[in-house]
Image (tube, rainbow, N blue to C red):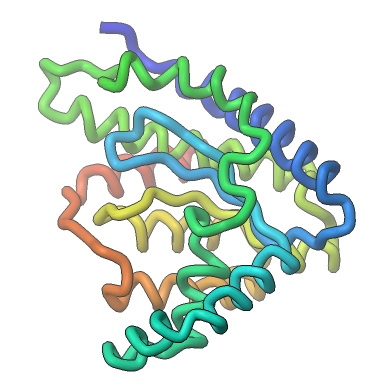
Length: 227
């Protein structure tokens, strides 16, 4: 069984992220981008980019505000409309208008980890999948961290207008992975806003969660701390 070269994966994610974000911003030069994320799925066999602009969020907000049935549903379930808009539409990378836009560069990324949908890990090792999943998570965070250190996402005051993070949808890992990646990849004030508007929303159970072995988080933390 072939193993993943996580150092190469890290470099490929950084290259593809730069290519994607450059292309989307160039195609929508009149828009102001406030978020960039990369996300995987719960079996960690694919990685995709996502980004959003203030104008795109305003368009989504207008659609929600015009949908009376959705507003009634939220009211009947005692869900705050402002919290819903922030938690799901402003900060969910899977709800963003430019999810997977200009993502051709991620084909080279996914060849390193997909293995016909099965992933690359030692099936004879009881911890094989946990190590693989944690390695993919860590490579995502370290790749964006490399771009951040290079000043790609902005420098000084300008850096405070963009939130960068990593995610995995509908997983027991969602809340801790988004929170830890956002904390590592952003200035404190940017992270604080994201934590209050997004992490509180999903940690309160607004996004479906499933139990996740502590081993994935523990391995991930050791990798990013030593990265």
